[in-house]
Image 1 (spheres, rainbow over the protein chains, first blue to last red):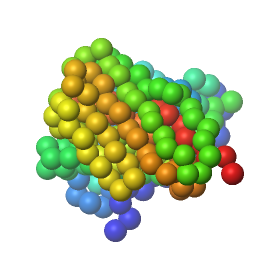
Image 2 (image 1 turned 90 degrees about the vertical axis):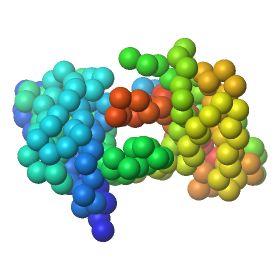
Image 3 (image 1 turned 180 degrees about the vertical axis):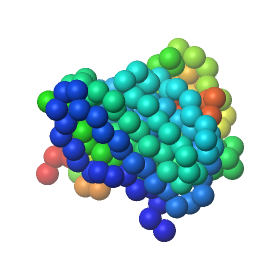
Image 4 (image 1 turned 30 degrees about the vertical axis):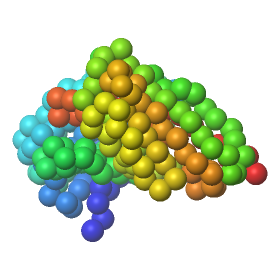
Length: 116
Length: 109
């Protein structure tokens, strides 16, 4: 099992460009999440999904869109990248049962995005 | 949103030393979680705490759920090089995790 896979691992964008980050999980998890990590800020939730076809806003959703057309994939889109979106992006997934018992999220290894 | 404040923000210690860090909040929580992030990786769950006063160990790691339910502590005994990383506290609510600001641990050779 690969767990949670994020692509790409690194990307440099110019201001105003668009891109999509892909998160794929092979564990049949219901829940998926996108976080961004900035120095001294911890991980902040951007958007999340509690099942195929559903999405919801997190703490810092502005400037991002998401889609969950298939249960195993959760896409994060930047329509017009800004320097403030320079960050490390993490995807995570979990099951309903793990949420209820031990909150064991499985995280991907991250995508480092630089907007110049 | 809910704010989880961790201290210290960073620590520089020598191998073999003990480490203590804490996490505080203005709100009462029913659970406290501690995660570790290795360099270049995503966070991994270390310990979960479910009730006030609870003390839980995982090898050299010990975490406590504060009596007031507004704080939690993580201790690492006899640190080793692989303890390097960022430690996050977290709380779970409304189907999602909220993370603290993190404590970065560096071990000086």
